[in-house]
Image (cartoon, rainbow, N blue to C red; front, side):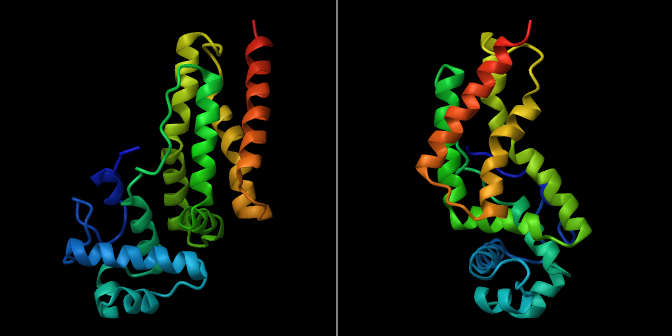
Length: 211
């Protein structure tokens, strides 16, 4: 997936320059702070995250953090907005069925990653209105890669031209989110196979039931 957040994405975060980097903070220090945030989110969760703990884990003075990010919500949003998406699965197998099977395998691997789990749970637990708003927009952007197989299927005639791609994306991703953020059930290979099979049956019904 090789896409980076654009400068305009990062500029939405309070305390950053138009180039997307917090004012007065070197790239090395910023990366160390972001890495510390990821580790602490995995270990302790968003509710327990404290800027003082981030500073200690990153090996920087806490005043350095407070000059750049007034709240942990701003810091976490910055981490998410400037994250790299290389680990997102990009698939193009030539058919909708093959694409969905490959995509689900990639999504299962992604949703088993502790950092992904921590970020999903952060989105679910965020109580700061600005952070929630930013994360909702980020979630919309992050599903762009899931849309591609459906758009190709429409172009090939496997799905109707007016297929509701947004709804198909939600139906595919929602079971994964539910397991991570709600039920706590395992996201394993067997679950992935069941998800792909069920979803493809639904997609086939969606295609054949329309004129």
